[in-house]
Image (cartoon, rainbow, N blue to C red; front, side, top):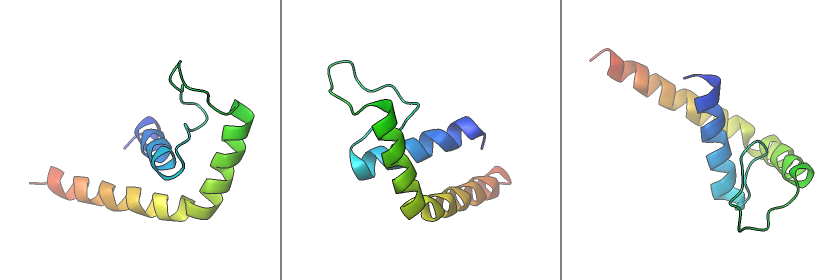
Length: 71
């Protein structure tokens, strides 16, 4: 899995858990998103709390995908 795919998974987990767009993602035009700085601060706080779990889940998915590639 490349770094772009990994970021997309992390950003989607952040969105699902917080309702916020991750910094680096473009919020819908008709929404009233928090500023980039606020989203960045919230993402950093979220990552501190949940980053290890997210990294572990990504690693688990990668190992499953590698196993399936051998079939």
